Amino acid sequence: MAGVAFSTAALVIILSVFNGLEDLLRSLNNSFDPEIKIEASAGKSFVMTDTLLQKIKGTPGVSIVTEVIEDYAYVRYRDATQVVTLKGVSDNFLEQNRIPKKNIVQGELRLKKGNTRYAIAGQGVSNILSLAVEDPMFTMQVYYVKNVKNISADPSSMYSHLSIVPGGVFSIIQNIDDNYILVPLDFTQELLNYGDKRTSLEIKVADEDPTRVKESLQKTLGKTFRVLSQEEQHQDLYRLLKMEKLFTFLTFTLLLSIASINIFFSLMMLAIDKKKDISVLAALGAPAGLVKRVFLYEGILIAFFGALIGVITGGALCWIQQTFGMVSMGMENAVTPGYPIKMIWSDFALTMGVVSLLTILISARPATIAARFSTVENL
Image (cartoon, rainbow, N blue to C red; front, side, top):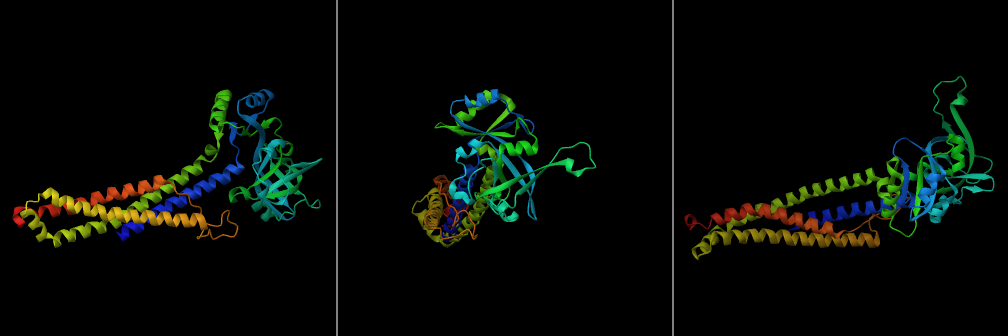
């Protein structure tokens, strides 16, 4: 019973941690990602026209349409260099409120002030480049390698170059902080020579169901464009998390099976030890089926109470972690002080179901052997 309880509690805790990590990752990604993203079905970019923009704005539920040009660029600041993801956004990006003020660790959340254009860098980029925010003495040098077919003797013709002032630093999640720099759209248009081309459009939805708005946009735009929800923007990542959770569940199910083998040997020893008592029951008229059910029910009771104790213990430990954060992430700059926990009752029910099934299968053999001892030959 103790072995079953321990394995059940461990499985409940592990599944709850995976749920918490997935929920935390979704919340962090959703704070930076748009509710709906539109990109070309084929190719890297598409031509932005007034007709296309009016189609999208005319779709019910669409509140803000932000134009985006995103590509890799080489950044130099003083003596430090880094390859970053340069994301140029139109001025209404700030109206979407996707980067809360609490996530701005230095400077201000702004892209322009008068004729001055500002860059908002992730904290990881800022640390590598040692950015001095709003220091006019040093600007950020951004280089973009052109797709040139003919190699020229002049290296400067193979890339474009612009300068921009670092205006702020944000911190959301490490993957974003270490790679992204946000700049005004016209800056990327000039640097990348994109003109009317865009790599994506980011949509903020009004007070309507984003799924319904997504479906409406897909019908309006047709197969030329892909309309992605927040889930679909990181589909591979979330699928990987689900696979990790599945394999973890299978691994701990194997541990539960090993713990349940103890029940098998216990019942086998009990059947041998109670051989004479079984014969007495048979002499009193107890059928073999009754003896078999006695041992089968005993195995089920052991597993049931072990699993019940494990589920209660695991749930209690999860509640303590969720409430007080007893176990920390072990990192100073962690987005949450303690390991995130999210209890889903279906995981509890699934764990109990798996334990019950394993117990019935394992208890069947000792119960059958015990029933044989009730035959006339053993009296």
